[in-house]
Image 1: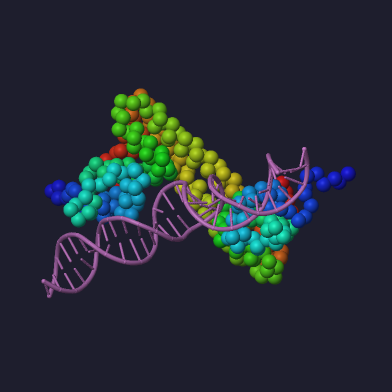
Image 2: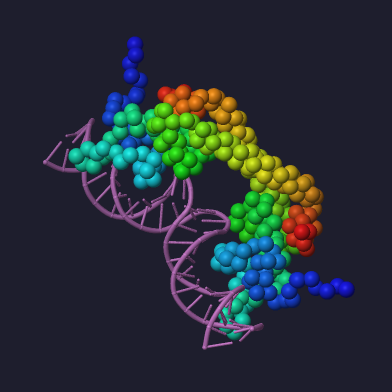
Length: 143
Length: 143
DNA sequence: ATCGGGGTTATAGTCGCTATAGAGTCAAGC
DNA sequence: GCTTGACTCTATAGCGACTATAACCCCGAT
């Protein structure tokens, strides 16, 4: 029982870490250069080596990215997450702001969808000369 | 009556065209380099000059951008819009595809919004050490 | 003559990667 | 020991649709 089932032992190479976290090796290196991950320790020949600490940090980053957060926000969250005693309103603020951002974007896209709907239904023509879509896009001024 | 009310006479300088269309001068030059606009005619001293033809073309581009279309699609639409006799199903296809694209994006963002909602409501703590948001983002694995 | 507000070019930066080139490393099989 | 193939390293360029900057030129009004 409890055989480790394809999870490699620490330390991890970059490729193993990539497989463990679902973040590509190139992206991991990119995160290092972008100061989201600390400079990795290296083998004598220069290969990066990682421990479960970096693995967890990377998973944290990946979850934040999945929420649509930018790297700046993620850097802030990582920094904050180390200050266990600090008040967490800055954390709340980042998430709240992102929520508002997403909601705004949804509203914009819904308006867009309607407009595209209207446009798509408008065209019952055969040729471009009669096409209501092109006509609509070419309309003299309207605003 | 019928005084021209701040609409300058043709030909337009790039700045006048920018004001007429709501597209910044730098962007107009960018569109020229990107082959969305033909190379403008020039004054003796090298200033670009535009007519109502380019003004309308630029408005067309702006409307397409407002619909979220990429410059490649817009190039295609511009090319198509000159072929008055051609069938317009390619036009339809571009709009349709964009609609699907937008709908997919909305779905993604709505899922995101829910997740952010949950996260935001989860945090009733005072300090980061107790913060459910950070905790949730740091969770061991979950997938 | 000078000033402000235009215009011109070329180049680099934005964001979050992704792709490419060219080289070095490592374990396994022969 | 040698080769093979998978892996890793660095550095650089590209994506899309602009935006910003620098350094210069032009034009009309004072």
